[in-house]
Amino acid sequence: MSKVPDFGCTFEHDGSKYLKVSHGDWKMYFMDVHPDSGFSIEIKINNLKKDTNFWGFELGCVYQSRICDLKRNFIGYHNGVGYIALNGKVEHCCGQGHSYGIKYGTGDLVKMNVYSDKRVEFFVNGESQGVCFTLDELPVIPVCTVSCDIDLEIINFYSLDEDTIPDET
Figure 1 (cartoon, rainbow, N blue to C red):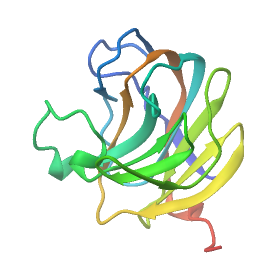
Figure 2 (tube, rainbow, N blue to C red):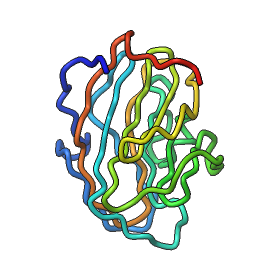
Figure 3 (tube, rainbow, N blue to C red):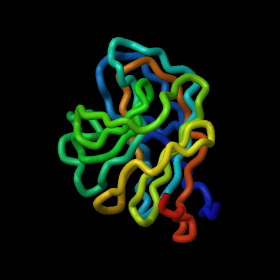
């Protein structure tokens, strides 16, 4: 895979590559990078404790030009796309999940690739879950939303060059 060096991605709220949260209310956490084109981000979920919400956690991205109300803590509210941990669905429209991939949680490595042709693909432990969505525009910002107890870390972040676009399947 062709890639450009690591950006040094961290979470915007505290400048750390770790996210440890204990709460039951939805909250969105932005990463502090704003890539102009394609990128790849990989996280490791050290611990995810299921609560009453059947989504729990999602990794995704939101349009940089469409972030409107930061009190709205849903990826879908900002017209982004996110892969939901506890049911394996993908969200694009707030509150609506569509069948997509496998469920993921404690111990899993989850990667999101946003390609320069605007397609979004997720991987769990190195296995592609397929291209789930084509964005309207770039740039987008990587984010995650949380409604459970979670401990995770950003393992890798890099931009993807034009040669990294996969074939349509």
